[in-house]
Length: 214
Image (cartoon, rainbow, N blue to C red; front, side):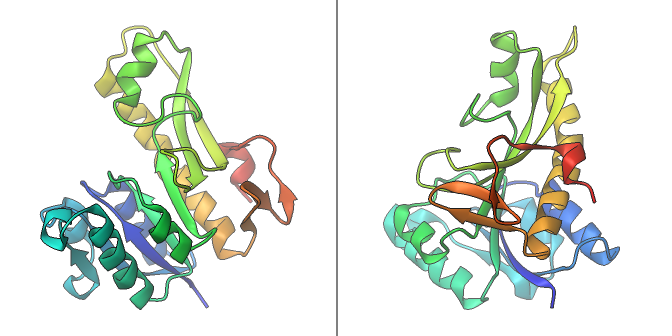
């Protein structure tokens, strides 16, 4: 059976579109069972049929904790195998994470643990990084602090600005996320004691993108 994916997104949803396209092309054995957003006008919601869309604002739910509870109930209602954050701009609370232990993934545009949080491309430039990239990691209660599964690296080039660097990273985000999801679909990924496991073995360093390919 295809794995069931619940997607959390706050923005344009380009990584979500990559997932949709891969499923349609038969390149990912998965089914999207819901797309959930904290922003009702998020472009990501338009990338799936209306019955799969769910959006609320924290304010409408009565605050962060209430929002997390309502969101968790909605996500659980579609019985996902994995919850995948793609440009989801809120920190998930402990209660939400406890509902889906070891089953929440996030893609982040930096080589974690460097540049957690926002504005990663400009920060990489400001700090003179020679390399930048993207990471797929398990989600815990620390911002971008969960165990890293895989990373894609790009060189920082002379003359780069945040926009050009972001575009080059984004081109690697899509294959990195899809290939990590293929491992999830094959039952190869797990989280144990805060560590990422591949085929039951602890990953001591993140998989480079080329190592994720079968």
